[in-house]
Image (cartoon, rainbow, N blue to C red):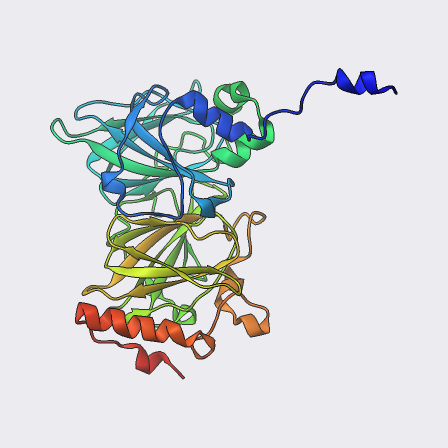
Length: 359
């Protein structure tokens, strides 16, 4: 082949993912980085697709495997009906309202929600959200699998207009969002609706240390899942690492998190209610409660115990790195971790409770 033939070849496509190209078409703000201080204060702009105000969130730690967006519904209004070929877990940041869900040609089912609720419209089912207040906006955050699905399929018509009905996930059951769900060993609750994750009862989680508790959540037959965890005043959890995409939403308490790639210095992020942090792929991270009340967070993530395949088995995170696990025991942590926490407790005038958890 002659040199002239090579010269006629078109240039390579722009180095931008299909997901990023879609975001540009949507015309709403994109928030990047490692951390967001307060989801209630995120500035939003009109999103034509939704019919409300919104901003898309693609933090570094998601690795473009999943993402999030914050959306606000005006008082007395509803968003546009939607369906899409990606999963979406919704946590209500503020306000109250209702959501109607239906399969094409099937009956409509409506359930109510308020601040603290967690739910998911089943994959590719029609759904529409409504604000139940005539005077106050309703705001929610949704963690979605849009990036990986759009990048794999790279056809927006298929993503938003596919007619396939996943009856194995949702068959228009009347009690779909009201049934009690099922409990499994390992602190796992399979459910389709949580009324208030801020106040739900949790189960002791000794393996992560510091008197913590937790419940794992499997929702609407999704591969995306979550967990709610809490740890006492004046304590901190053991450092660990895992795959990308864990969106950690602080529900209560004040403290900070350390994150670091293996073998490198840590980075500190101070948080309070409404903060969002997403640890990057295989970065160690550790959460510290230096505030005056128990710290509770909601993590929306990959790592389902029912549908394996996206990231490490969550069970490995409770095992010591010295035995092939993903967790650093207290006795093996960098001495700077304890010194930093002692200083944080002294500054907040909180009693350091960690002596009883050290070996």
